[in-house]
Image (tube, rainbow, N blue to C red):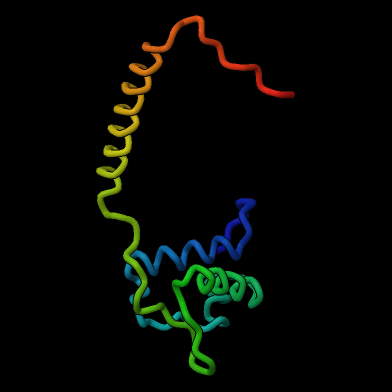
Length: 120
């Protein structure tokens, strides 16, 4: 499953597992497949899979239990909002409002005001 995109395989695997966690395929408390199973699934080496899982540990998404495996943390925050389009719309509105306000401020400045030359 790791593709030759120029992006390292361990990052691709971490991205996919992260998406599964945030999407609910790997629920809080669920065990990740073993390193060997993940290596087979992603057609990657064990070290690449371990690096991917390490990233998820550092992000606080999973926790390892000695001799038991790696589990999705119980307190993982929900994934990105399902209403991403609404959030983008709100951001666009805010940028538009700020642009109008900036234009008003700039119109109040004297035209002869020049910015000082930046030091070389």
